[in-house]
Length: 186
Image 1: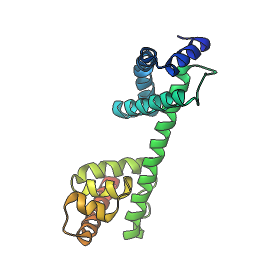
Image 2: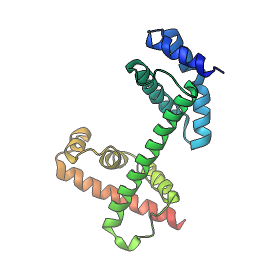
Image 3: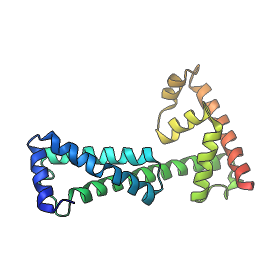
Image 4: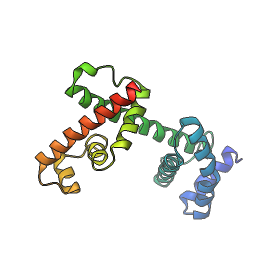
């Protein structure tokens, strides 16, 4: 485990272009972060790897730009904090996606208000989306998760026109709603 002064020397070496130090930092904390993220955030290995990769790139960019010229704790703590923030950011994005789909579902039938109201229901939505398969899953993810326009989706999926895409989206939402209600009643 490196001390703060050693970590600060490592940062200076990276600023001077020492790629060997950069590679060591990347390798020293990667697996530990992945295991920690999976355990702490209950995420997949891929999500943990992506968070580390993004966190490491931010660290490297901050070192090169001079935003970080020294650390008061350790490089490891700095990297883990960035990765943790990226995981929180992703979770917030997923929850926002869940609420938008919920609002869309409830907009079609407000009598089912109690269908989607918790984290459990978020998991039910995810399961429902997986069961939908293509093209429904693709349409709904592009529409709500990726915030793509109807025209973009029409072109991407090769539909005749935007009305066809809207009609398909409506049918997909109805199928998703049935799947979620069925899961809820099970």
